[in-house]
Image 1 (cartoon, rainbow, N blue to C red):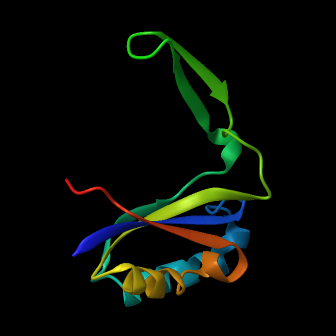
Image 2: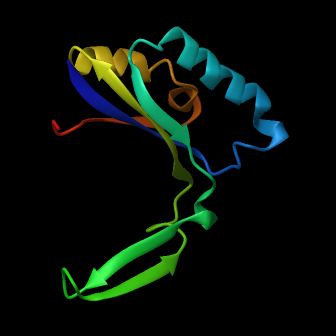
Length: 114
């Protein structure tokens, strides 16, 4: 079976905050109902906590860091699941069950084999 990264793009909120409890319950339900296909994943803290890393001049060059995400958008990368599915159709079926797909977007990408 192929592994797929399901990247969730939603409003950039703190998913650990009490006001997100109801939606987090939906994510837990997704996890329970699809445990056989989930190989990993996590919610991410809001984008202001991000650090972007670049190396000028390639390998061994100057390491440059910046606060925040690469780009500002209305929807931000807020989490991910590592799914195992027979094919893209099955991965899409699973991704459609994620709450992020209902009010944001879920990007599904095959993972390069180990």
